Length: 265
Image (cartoon, rainbow, N blue to C red):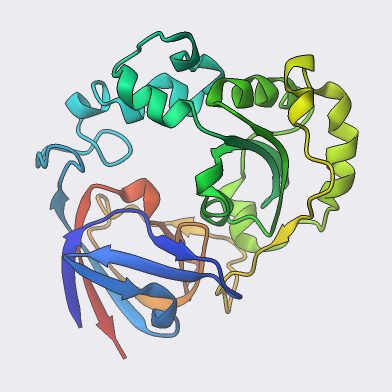
């Protein structure tokens, strides 16, 4: 079966294991059902996810012009503490910024390669954790806006990582951790303004991924440098396709690439 289209991040559905869906050329492919099949990937070109430009993708699937103009790529996305919509201050598009920033946000702990702290909109639970390849995750704060979530994250990441090591995550050997214990230990580092939003009774969520073989030494596929690749899919974790030769392909980081996908038996 042949497919062709522009890559966007895989959609997911909470199940045991996680269900994955890849949208390509108008088709919605059940990616988890491609495991054990040979896939051929071919790089064709670029297409900006916003304006459709065919120039080289700059970041997050956007051309350079769109990346520096769109509100969804502004600095507050990566740095929630820089959110200003609650002060009625515009950065790029106040209407968009109010819509995204002034809604409930979750500060969480997740264990993917290690225990980390992170921030996401409440509507993105558990999608955010799945995308990060977390084996367990726990909500520790629910705050009314993105700014407060950022304030909490900045305080906590002085004591705990806010990054995932993608290689270790893909090896699937993260140490088992009791996130409830971590929540208790970190609670004393929370700023006073977010303490009323502390969550104490909820339980961690365990996530299972459709992986039949974890790579010992994962090597990342760059389709712009290796424009054709074929291998047998043996698993999916986070936003990564995992192949039998330990090659891994990060779908999300390759958004905006136009590719051909040939699925063989």
